[in-house]
Length: 389
Image: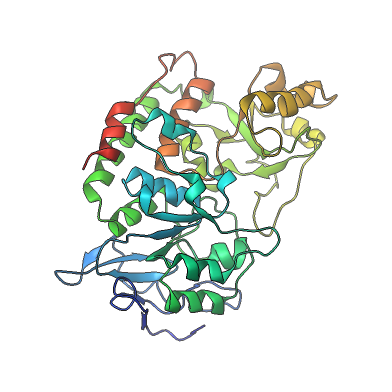
């Protein structure tokens, strides 16, 4: 991987972002383990800028600037956060792949007339047996890989930097940034908020007007919620945890970590009960667990529990996890248990459409007296923005 401070063009092989398109900005994986310089930081930041009458560019760390001859027709995705963005922008039909289908929660689309995505049609990138194969990327032959390469080299730990370079040159460039959490030590380049990243994706597919319309709905929803919140000193705290079936230990996330999947909790004023502890959030370098005694020592106002396994449905969650916590000798002493403040923790990957539904759901759960009317945003208005051409 290049380690000098110059910028260079990386030609690819097709007429779209391949052949006519380039990545500019040097090393693909800024902030890699050997301390290589981040060659993308010196260029001017912009969501998109025209380079000619026929091309446009989008820049995003850590992958640099990509020049497009036209809007991508096929996009290889990985993180459901970004796929939700494409669906929101009316380009869900361009998506070719996903990390694993089970991580992409799509039930919120059921409430939006005409909005859907066919999960069965998406190539699943990750395999427990063989990791992620480069052959899959050659077979998809996508116009763009909408993912931070660190998904492949750090989180999935399947590829080397040379593998990323090979696919970038031989198939299509990468564009993306891991934003769902902010606890990985290797992520020493710029983070983006959910809507900052969403704006970049809107620039890729040239959907500025649709993006602005959705952002307006989001801003109005946030304003309505903030107007109904109690005073700051009357808002609860919470522990956000991953809970296996019939849990005897839990894996902590940090609400204060500012990842995209926690933005709705921050809007609602839910504070991190881990704030005055030395507990770290889950990351590639820290997957430590805590026990019931630690939970009782902190004794949060509420518990937000994420889960997999048998507890995929709400009913199974109550049976396999909540009932077990309530009946546990120590768990039963928690204030959150006594006050019936145990909630599902929501998706790990939360795009802009997810975010709207999560804002509304948790407003009702945490402040039922203040948000008793149910719907805070207009489903029909949102669906029309997504589906109308």
